Image 1 (cartoon, rainbow, N blue to C red):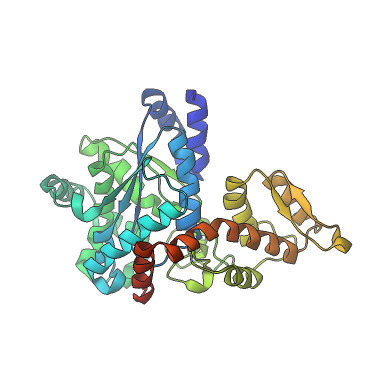
Image 2 (image 1 turned 180 degrees about the vertical axis):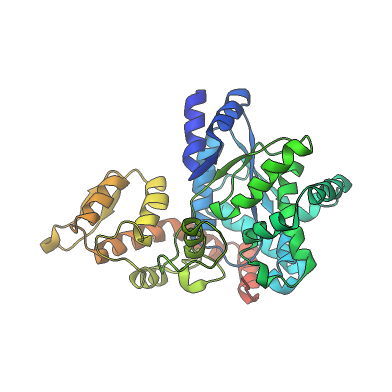
Length: 362
């Protein structure tokens, strides 16, 4: 694969790339740049985690990227996930790996790393102190939004370690590309600012889209100064907000029920979770999308691109109910292999049952 194609594949994954020139330099100089994304083991898998993430990884690995999936168990511990029980958090991490594999992720093309293994390195903590000494309290406070928290919610000193540790992860993993969601961009920016001060590799930030929750656009939670970014983060599909999410264990009936109750205003193409899923999941997984309609409304119709679908919906020529039915069908097609894996595989089933019993916190 030529350099330009590799560059475009990686760039396409990001809704924001800082910077494109730096990304091009990396692709031109390295056949296998290193990228990572980190995940707190925090509950059952949903669409962004179990479907969207593997789809993005397929393009990245196709472009030659060596991807490290960071199971951030210590971060979940700091953020009081699973009641602050580290061993329970680690088991949820094992469950995460099962979800990704069932979602089509080739374990030969990615590397799974538990934070608790890497944090045994004394160099990690030496660098942690150096990053902390070069970060102001106000900067650390502004970065707390990567936890989904505001300053007023902080009750423990350890929670202030979080942004420093996340920036440190990038250096510990020898990352060229920090490929996380848009809601994690402040940790990437902190690492980029710190890197030249400590003579460390400066990462490129390729921040991917955040899938919208079923409820559509929500009022901002005050996590970001930028109102547009705050709305995006507040409106994302979140495991800790079950009413906003489709999970990878949902039955076809549950998926249809949830989609039917989702926000989908006629002709609205800006704040529409159905179009969001079509654009970022369905058309990334399939070359076209067929929506079945009653014959009196025109019968089945096949779209060869997202742009065709959006244009027809914007004109009012595609009814929200028909769009919802089509989206629900394709989501179920993608979820079904994961759902079946956890029904048939004994190890996976035990992990699923364990995670189901855990208290999920924001």
